[in-house]
Length: 377
Image (cartoon, rainbow, N blue to C red):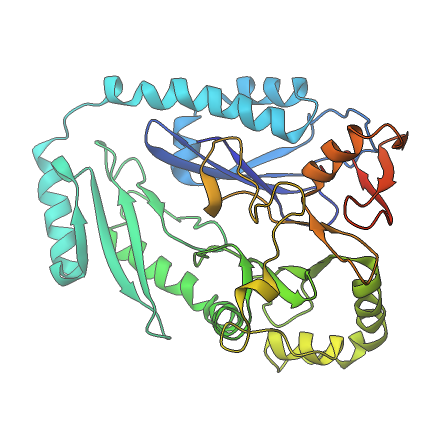
């Protein structure tokens, strides 16, 4: 699985990445990434890595190496590949470092599970190396908290994992127990009740183009606006009803009026309403929904490769990769394209001209002027 890299803000100074190594999923944030001019290489020496306790445990003692890779990396993507290489070696050595826990370890874990209640256990790992608990929140949503227990537990804190929109920073001491972990988890998920309510309202009433199967950790949605246009949203999990980060995709002739309404009507935003309700009021539209729209009106195929989703480099096919993000500005055409496909098309035409990082040419269908940035592709 190739690493997936997602920006966390519009300034592109923070990123979230996840990938698989030796069958294990790893994810972390990279923050304090310096902004750079187009094409300019910058050092990541002042950037910071934010990960969960499992990642910190694996990288313990390797901080100088991680900092060296940050200093040498010219962009976030190359650093993520460096981190994957490091974790492939570190995670591969975990089994050789494994030692059998003591009898006190088993007695303690069993007694702590008794206190929590066996009815909450959904999985118990071999040799008690892990235990998964089922937890229900105030909205009756089911959550699974995965706890990995080191052989030196409780002197060494356990690693915790769950589908949350932010890191679960476990507060641990030698006197802590599994009950304490669950108490901290319950307190944390209380903070996201409104966030999940807001996102569930979007998923139920709006045609969501991406992600196809959003998890409770996902704060990103790309929703259809109709007319081959879409709107991407990044929601603050702690302030779910506040104005999100937004970006419009599609023909300029269609989205320019929407941008104008956005700028003119943003004062209408009310923090006591659902996010969807505010967006529809500010943009003065009703979003297409799965109940009253058909697929052909929402997800047009790329006019060059004839696919809706452009497969990623890992070849995972139609359920992965980007959707068309560029459209012809001719209102009688409006054909959508993947930026990568459009760039390759324009490069193959002798009449295309290039200025810096932008290709200028004509729409393959109506010959209307069209342009695409190489960085977008």
